[in-house]
Image: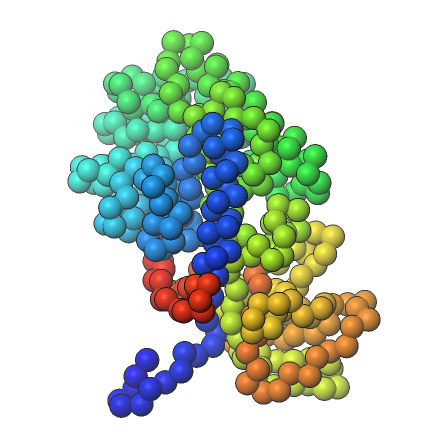
Length: 375
């Protein structure tokens, strides 16, 4: 970066992406879906980058999942047009959804009420999936809810293609604490979706799409029988929450925040860095797990974890590093200006704080990959 004629160094905090780890995480997921015999519709809500998307698709079907209409526009502008908008749609967003379809984007939407199904049907066909509640986590129809069939019929009445099928997200899998529990969560997710689809088809409404997924259930599913696709997103980067579930190893985490030591509080046994919650987010997703990682786990400049050093507190632009409570390790001596990396609790939330990735290749070369934002 230049200011006038002066060459300036890249400043911290900065979002780093290890391309080698990204590729390894992608290879692991694709090996799994190939074994299960279903395609993957990768979720781009974490990545929010065409560079990551191209890396993720790389010869696979160019079909993705997004969580905002802004993401749908962004990826469509970059040539990816088979898109599932996987957040419940509201009436005020239907005009934009139709506008995207009118310019050639094969956008599909989701909903979980008869009221919304009737609103979509009244305005003309937008291909729609009905969201199924497979584990009581958040939204969706129960598989045996009579309103599910009513909503499917309302959509199907518009004509062929208006009702595409059913989808679910097993968010409850984030509460699992063993591999056995993860496999059971994946089985419940699949069976709930199959049950919902069979109930709809029993009412003489075709149900072509059966879309399931979360990173934990996709990676630990033993079967995809009855499903037509899997969805997952954070698997590309992984994070401390996934590591705490046993979904990945700490060393699999591809994204981190580079930060600099800016001060010390010797009496409090603190190290102060220039990455606060504006760089890391306020996500404390590991707080309810057996190992609480604070606001992030600290690594050296090369990405090697520093034993028991975590970010214990975060102000807007200041992060406070200290030893994990109960640790017998000694606080390391880190001079002012020392570069560190901090692994995030939640890759989606941390990445959202940054405009671009500094993507690092195996040879150490750095690329800048822009990220998009907005709704």
